[in-house]
Length: 140
Image (cartoon, rainbow, N blue to C red; front, side, top):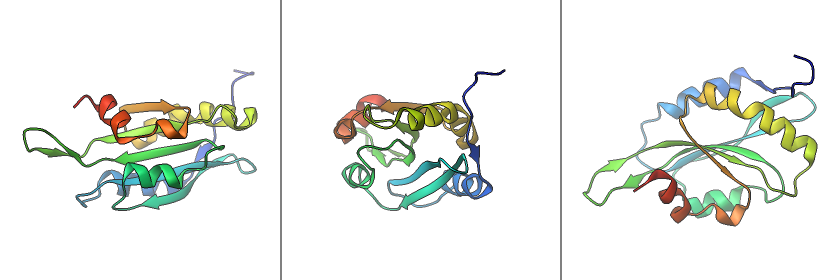
């Protein structure tokens, strides 16, 4: 197994936050933003946004550093139904440090599995993270 990328540890705090986020009862859009602590090689909580919008989420992400986003999106369907799909968004800007990109890429699947989220999307440019983009991914 030598030569494999070091996978960053998902801390107990993050595991607990993921569990609480997955079972939250609020009826709005929310996001849990996670980042890699390079020194400790751990995934840690960067920010939690409640009652947010996709525009606000975009504003809260750094443009030159990768992030993991767990998003609970309030989706209003044409027939009047409302659903709350849980999405895993891997944001990795092209101009971020190669070492950071590798750490994030190596940790992505473990975190996605821990979060128990099947809808996973990758985005390279922050301006691409829009409501239209998300709706196209969710297949409205």
